[in-house]
Image (cartoon, rainbow, N blue to C red; front, top):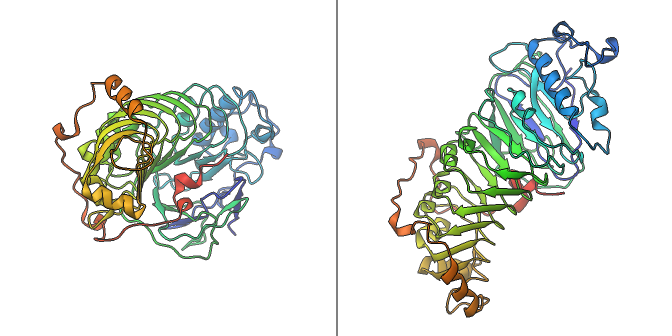
Length: 437
């Protein structure tokens, strides 16, 4: 009988229902494939051998975990005390690591999820750890301190899942989440394509919809980790579906390669970092993204014309940057019949004008342009402050009108419903739900 897992997450977190298309992926190994128990083999890190593990992938995962463990300088909850022995997939051992069986390797367990959220771990970097676990599809490690090593490279992670988000969730704050499963056959840990349903604290018996067309996805959730350095240049080749990097110290530009995530990325949260450079026009290629949040950074330039392609965006936050120029009507019309936009936050910038469609959104409370430089609107910056910025602003960002835009062609089954403004609870979004200390 499949076990039910409880993941120790401090607040309203997801992964409450793990539903599989062909069979279920529960945590422990099946009766047909018992993993050796650590208490049966009291072996040390130095003398464990490949034959002490069910397969070579778990042996390699073991070495990656132990190598990372040796770099941890603070572990207030003694989580790493459970990272010992050869039972990586055990119910009580290796807290934070979860196993499943990828499609291409029948009955071969491997580490597919790492959940270190809220453990308060401190280590100098994540490189050499996450990228050495090639089957990981979910890495959630908010509220730790992984230093100045930057974001781990994800392009080599070959195994990935279908990731989906329930469109209608009713959040209830809990101190844990659960991963449950059902199977068409009485075989544990055998799976084909997997669909994660993020339930965000709702009960396992509550229904919900699936967003179609989301394949080959991964989730990287690293809020509150004191990460520094630049985003990897090849970030867009990582097949991410959910990226949460809020409240770190990341610097530099948003890499142009992010455009390659147009078929997978559903939510990106870059809030409260130190990102700089021109607002990347490639962000406008993320036609499937419901959340794009790059607020509280140092990005500059006008809003690129490509942002009119964001037909799925519901939450767009660019507040607290150094953006300027005209707020394009083409963007504001995404709150109308051509898109789903429910919240557009541009406060704390240096915009100087808005069109009629944007003016209507201000009146409706959808668009926030407080603390800008727009004549005739209330709650704007002082004229002297606006003049000083105009004189000092960078001249390197291309004007929005000079950039040609060809929007990604949506798949037939991805068409946005006409005239539907998507108004959802803030915490019904995966990345925002993980935004807590």
